[in-house]
Image 1 (tube, helix red, strand yellow):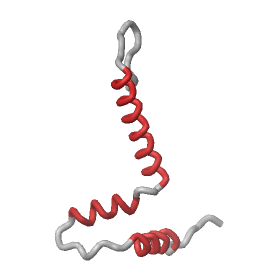
Image 2 (image 1 turned 30 degrees about the vertical axis):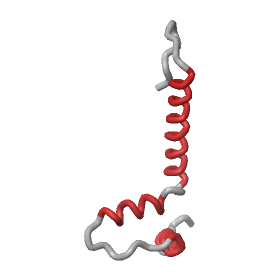
Image 3 (image 1 turned 45 degrees about the vertical axis):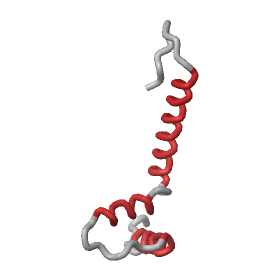
Length: 77
């Protein structure tokens, strides 16, 4: 939520801090939406599991994602 500017005086550092937090949040949301952060999320989940096999490399993860996406038949036509 942006700082309220009606009658209140805000210091430049607080506005800069608010802008940085807002941009950081927007950047994280964009990465989640586009799927760019999928590998980092995979590593966090894998690290949290006990007895999990070694994590896949980024290239292996990418190939697995492609195989998972395109291995199922589509019924578009």
